[in-house]
Amino acid sequence: MSIKDVSDYSGMSKVSEAVAYTLKKMTEYAQPGMTTKELDDYGAQVLKERGAKSAPFSTYGFPGWTCISVNHAFCHGIPSQKLILKEGDLVNIDVSAELDGFWADNGGSFILGKDVHQHQKLVEASKEILIKSIRHIRGGVKIADIGHLMETEAKSRGFKVIRNLAGHGVGRSLHEQPNKLVNYKDPHDHRRFTKNSVVAIETFISTTSPYAVQLNDGWTMVGNMGGYMAQHEHTIIVTDKEPIILTEMNGIFD
Image 1 (tube, rainbow, N blue to C red):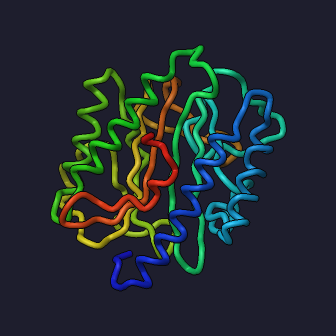
Image 2 (image 1 turned 180 degrees about the horizontal axis):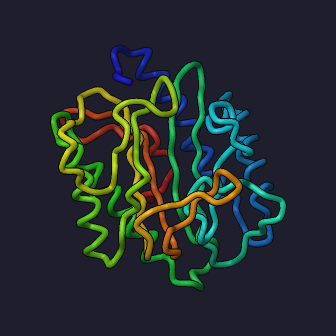
């Protein structure tokens, strides 16, 4: 969507704060011995207290309120009573929601407890690449140039990007134009970011795989060549200067 007036800005700010606060609280709440279903139920309660409705559940009938992916699961992980979190797990939580007709999206990967499996370098790379990418986004900047920056930065750190996952426009629905904000340079993409547009910009940084494939549960995605992936995502408003990060409250850059 494009921010046209104060009510648009207020609506997007409110829903973005709801998803950002929920992501932050879930990240803080997660602990070894807890099931991902317990963590998801907690997130559902936080969203409810903020008056927000789960976007994946209401939009796609996702079997959970938030997406929680652990270790080799890259994204769209289904919360489960059977999946128990352990020390050193690489955890990704993706929270998106609707509030008063506005939608926002954010996510983050983190290490649960001590980094016993040495995932921190991957997590930090994802964060750093997202920070750098956001700082380069302006109205008029080529979308493909940001994808090129993401892939170049990932390669310089010894990682890959997932080529079939992407950021997207957001605002009046969960996924809007511009879609396919990929993490690599598409030479056929001549689009440019538009001032006042709202987008969910996200990184998909991988140790091994260049593509994500869906498991038989119809939701969970893993790497086509295995390995691990870190993802970080903010909902932003594009300006003629640095973007406004609407989901900054989630604390993923802290």
